[in-house]
Amino acid sequence: MKGKRYVRDHLWIPIFEKVLAEKHSQPEKIRYLCLPGPECFYIRQLLGRKLISQKTYVVAIESNDEYHKMALQFCSKNLLKGNHEVLFGKFEDLCTKPILKSKFPFDVMELDLPEPFFSVRPDRQTQFLAAIERCLIAQAHYEKPCYLITTFKSGGTLPRGFLSSYNDISDYLVKEILERENSRLGSAPLKGILGMNPKDPSFEALCCLYAIPLIIIRRTSGFSNVSLLDVPYTYVSSAGSLVRLLCFAFHCIPREGGVVGHQDPTDGCLRDAVERVAKTVWYESRK
Image (cartoon, one colour):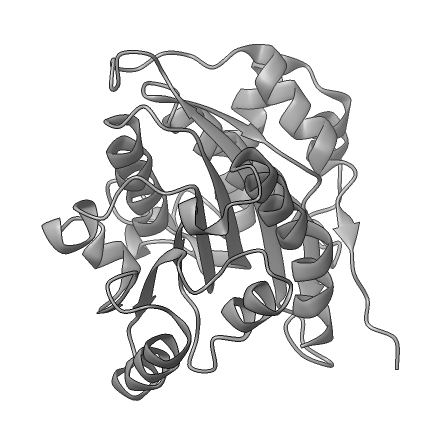
């Protein structure tokens, strides 16, 4: 939990400070979508720091039945009736349904999803990229900017049919995303990743760190100008674990006129993302 607390304090909290300033210190005007977990630790932290209030509009999503009941109980006690909703189901499923679509727009979407972003399907899509696209499309219809906070596990899975073409998920990310972006951008950090030994212990995490923001920025360019707001943060999920959690913060500004079809993001926006990823904070908890 030390790593998560560190990331919340250094990456997430500044976003809420920024949003509160944009709302002229009126937390009741903030609209917040989150995946809170059973104890709602981060909502507690935001309330304690007065970055949100009982009047803040909060939509929480929980897929575990028992956790949903606990989150519902917490929100009922700490947030005003009519100013919060606790939805039951998986985020990636709910974002296709009116029960969530009708709640847009939001000022902050905090999607703390400790699962791999790159669980690739046979159509080369990932469920979380599709879900993020749907949320930003819903946001674009209101032409309201928002901040997107995400957390994913490094790594991922490939369909069985892909295994004849790619050695593993890192090989897929290199060939399908990183090499292509490097050919467009000619970026020194990307060249460095492509020159690494794939057996390096940090190679998989680095491939994911670079590929996630690049594909989100490029794939959402038809309806939103998405930029990496700050440097990413990464930490191990537990002592002795080899799995790293990758944390990103994006600023998303819908294009004028709403959804306008595919447009290429500026090279500057993508280069900026690469430069920020090159400065990723690798948090290591002290014993």
